[in-house]
Image (cartoon, rainbow, N blue to C red; front, side, top):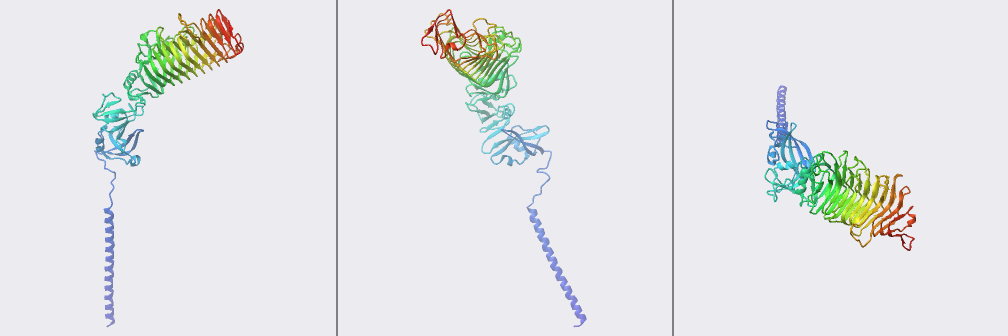
Amino acid sequence: MTLGNKILNTGKGINMYNRIHLNKKRIISSLVICFFTVLCFIIASNTVIIPDGPTPLTPSNIEAMFYIQDSSGTICIGDGLITSPQEISYNESATKAAIVTSPDYSAIVGNSHKIQWHSIRKRDNEYQVLGALVPTSSSVVFLGTYEDMLLADVTPGTIVQTNGRAQQNDGGSAKYEITNVSNSSPDGVFHIKLKNGYYANLIYENNTPLNVALFNVFPNAAVSDELNSAIQLIKGKAIGLQFNNGTYFINKPIKFDSLNYYGNNTTFEVTDDFFSKGMAIFSPLNTKDYFDIELHGIKFIWNISSSQILQNGSNYDIVLLALFNTQHIVIDSCSFICENDTTVHRKVSLLWFKQPDNIKNVSITNSVFINNSGHTLKPTQHLIGGCIWLSGTKDKLCNIENINISNCKIETTLADEAIGIWFCNANNINISNCDITNSYCNNDNVLGLMDGIFENININNSTFNINSPSMYATKMGNLWDTSHVNYDKCTFNINSENLQPYSNAISLFFLYHDKEGLVIDDASTMTINNCVFSTNNSSGKYRCIIYAFGVDDRHILLNNPTINSNISTKESIVNFEKVNDCTLQSINDIDEIGNDPYRILRSNNVRILDNKATLDVIY
């Protein structure tokens, strides 16, 4: 083989090599392209193209804000889309159909609750979708107000919880059961007919008071008609009514029934246009039936106005709260206040148990009674009225039993008794830890027990503030039978010049004659134990501390008295005048009680007994 042939043969070998090398590269490239093509296909087959929004905005898709309502209020949870601007009110199915997208609320409600979308509305250029948060395991629906429930598309078997009556959080929240029929006529509170034809029946406990907001009784409005209607509607159904924080204006008489009435920083205020044909602003329905009434935490305010018409415009006695036949009365943490910034003269009493047959089981505690109806009038004018009165009639004694007045502030600016009990057969009356004051007006007496029988009457740990002239701080007389009255650990602050307007018959304790024509066999007693007689100034003067006048068979026990040296008695500590068969007894030395311990005038058979006497000293 020649060199040329070798060269030629060599060139052919090179070309063959190149062709083989190029074919391999093409195969590898093709394989790589095929691999990437398959990979892209796999990725593409598992990928969703995400558009610009969850649902494109169209003329029929509108952005809306979504709100959840529950017992605590309303909260916004985000935005979504609805199909139409049409407003929907409490129609669950229509609302659900109108929703295109809604916010993810799973983190809010969790697994235990769900949202029932029920309404669509437009407020301030914003579309709002409203829903109720309900448990997944029950059919409870939470709605805003009573009106919302009336319009709701709720079905039988559903429990509805509202958050208010006229508006949310107004005190009128309640729970209702939805039924096909109602076993009573619709009354707007206990049985309510809904717009869809079903009934909402109030769920409540008989022993729990119902909020007055359920009866459309709200503060800052004249409520007499609504409140009287509520009292009649609730009677026999629930224990009583719960009032809310605020002032309820009283423009007509309120007729209480046998219920409990609970306040919460609550005021009843008599309006300037108050009108009544009767003698009381608050009273039971009638004077004959027996009533069980409880009042808790309510302030009764009467500002006297010349435009108010009472008793058809007459000037007879007017009572803020009058009560009649009672079997059970509780007044706790209440205030009864009458103010008079005018020159109008009203004969005002704050609380008067007036001429019933029986008054039983009365508890008045932690309360305030202030009768300021006289403080703008002449102090020498004989003004009628008081704070707490219990009375029968001159023809028939009222039976009074188990009366407790404790921890009360009692103040009068009138001539009559702050506390008066008369024409009564009274048993077991206790007045304890009270602050009792007369001020401004010349006063006849502060505490009076007159014209009746008084058995087991106890006044304990109470303070009497004699801040204006008072003829008798306390009196007991015209008895119909044997009576027993006890004062223990009381303080008498004598802060007025009593002898100035009253020159005669001045004393802290006045005992006077029995009922004319009666002969009482057993002695009546007045016991005064551990009492303090003091003054806050130097003008505390009385004729005597105890004055028995024209009485028979009285036994006075005066033990451990503390008589301030500033107290001035014109005559003696104890005066007996025109008495028969009376006794003054003490565990102390009578002569050491004070200067001129006793004085006896025109009397027969008066006995003085003390710790040193072995025999009666008879005058």
